[in-house]
Amino acid sequence: MSDSDKGAAIQHHEDMAEVQTQKTVDTVHKDEAVKVLAAYQGDEAWTDEEEKRLRRKIDWRLMPVLCLTYMLQYYDKAMLSQAALFGLRQDLGLLTGDRYAMSAAIFYLGFIVGAYPSMMLAQRYPIERVASGIVTVWGVCLILTVVCKDYRALYTERFFLGFLESGISPMFMMIVGSFYKKNEQAMRMGIWYSCTGYVSIISPLVNYGFGLLNGGVSSWRYMYYFAGSLTIVWGIILVFVLPPDPIRAKGFNERERYILVARLKTNNSGVRNTHLKVAQIWELLLDTKFWAVFAIAFLSMIANAPISTFVPIIINGFGFSTLNSLLLMMPCGLYAGTLQLLMPYLAYKYKNIRTYLIFVAQLGTVLASLLLWLLPQSSTGALLFAVYILPSVGGGYAVLMGLQIANTAGYTKRSVASSGLYIGYCLGNFVGPLCFKKDDAPRYVPGFIVVVVTAIVAAVLAIAYRLMCMWTNKRRDKAGIMEGFDHAYEDDLTDKKVRDLNPELRRLLTNQNMQFRYIL
Image (cartoon, rainbow, N blue to C red; front, side):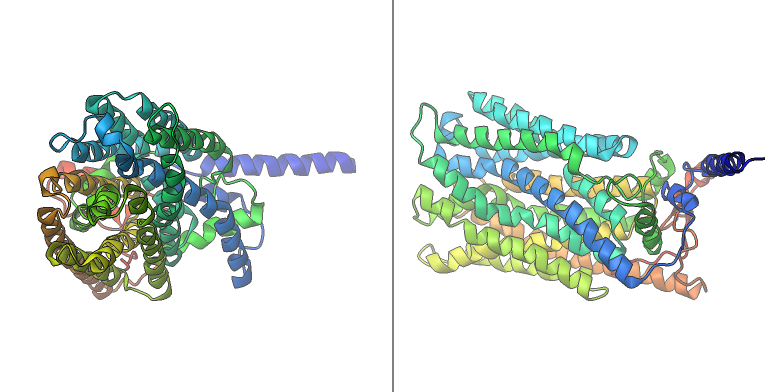
């Protein structure tokens, strides 16, 4: 046999071996990461320096994309509060009763309806295409705000805008969870979530400029034209620049992709699985810890109503002009963004303090609400200080997102859990504006009393969640099974198993990974 024939035979043998490997990889019961591990033939060890260099590469490719997308989302959805200062309430009849509050609340009703369908699409189809399509269409929907002639049309537009935007935050939670180790996730969640604060520094400046325009239409309509057009352009670009997961992300060689996947073994939660597993949904719905996190998100976000919807109006009520009220929002954004970065950084730096950080964040919002409730109208400086620290709760929510992802295993369970957390977020944002009645303006005392109570309960629940996780970890330690990663890519294994209630449920429920440990 000639050398060329021998070479062809060897190549054929290698190709057949690769095909055989691909055939034997079970991606229904196992995570898709197994395909990368099975195909890799090189050195399976790597240095800390290699991993550090690769982590920086992920950061530079992923974080700017997530940050810019989330900045646009918050800019778009918070546009209502700034447009309200420039004639939107008068033009669309929102000054009657609580129509303005309802126009803010109904946006989150759309969020609630859209969250799970978005995540099911993102699990089944390429996540970068789903995200790109959603962003582009919501940009179109945002521009359509300018054709609204009354509050009814605005309600409809706001509902569909919320429906379209609903999938972005849960998708980003899943993407971060698929690229980063547990101890790295909180910081990365904080980086993109902090954009809700930092964009609030930029948006008043942009909208201040539009507020000075004296064209043929109301100045608030120019704001929506600009924001919608910007969103459409970015939505089209997004499909080309968003890295979906370590398995399909472009720009990584074979060794880098192997390290990307193999280093995530310590998460004990896999990377990606496109098969919907009903058993994992049942398990989540019967999981007390999930409902504790859901309740924390719901109660925390009731405070978001004055932050995202009423802050410009509250500041205006202190006696400042319309344009100055807009500019005085900027310190509020700076504080919120910085805290949303600082708290996840502390969670990254120090082990098992996440629930404590959530607790402290609630207390900051409690203090702000008490000051806004009790201080006299003449204490303008102190009232402004209270407005500026009101978003403290956002720092805790940034930590909560990372905590939920890190403490959930099984791709379907993790996907539904991230959507569930966001539904809690949306419910809080839906209820919150309804607590701030038009008749209570400009101080909204009853609304701030509600915020004080709900934030205190959320703080207590954070400690209760910590105790539940500690109890489970200790019980597994006492069983003699230490933390390990032997089943990290078994997608049928989750972080827990609900007690069997009947034979049918026993058949449906998945097996727990006793080597899994909850972070605190």
